Length: 305
Image (cartoon, rainbow, N blue to C red; front, side, top):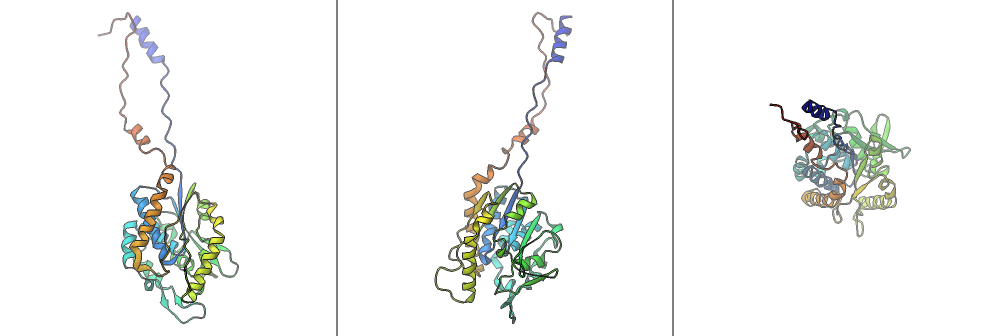
């Protein structure tokens, strides 16, 4: 009887509280700004995030940021992007043309993306992507999240004075930098809880301009510097790779630009990792093997044999 009473007490004992469930990971968005060849620094940022296993849930790109973003979201790894950057040149995206709207055409992007993209539409992408452009008539920002990829990218890269505006669905569109120099706000709309912004903010030139494109580029740099507070308000972390001294067509300096992106990303790793749940906490609980409960006999009882 004493043994039975001891057994009953064990059955009615309140079990220990279950460990709290691991905190859900916050969704992270990555905004890639424009900057022509300087945008190769974006590859360095992505390279570090891959090495450190920083998950990216959403990407938004402007101008060259839309090119890097589209390739990456389609499944092209940072390592593959680095290999592409080693051989890519301005002529792969543009060709001279006779037009009163611009001196180059960017229709070569069509064949460029046909060779490299692992998905031709937004819906086929592995990571949700937003591409920004600017309505030439109204100045309104235009954000693409569905349909074919190539035309929105061409519009996002249609730098005024250099490339003609691109007609997409009956609207003339130009470079997304005019409306979203660093597209942080679209990421919030997509559901990002934390936003990392990559800004290529160095002035276009630091001396006398060489030609009309230096004049246009410097004016853009000044305007972006005056309005940076708008996009920074939606960013939790701002990465600014050191791209001073790199011209708009410095594609041959890809290794240096990629290293600049790597350096900027490493500086922010400590802050970004604070957004993630404690590494291995959930795994440790999962790996624990259930133990058999050992019932100790009450004082004075005789163990049952």
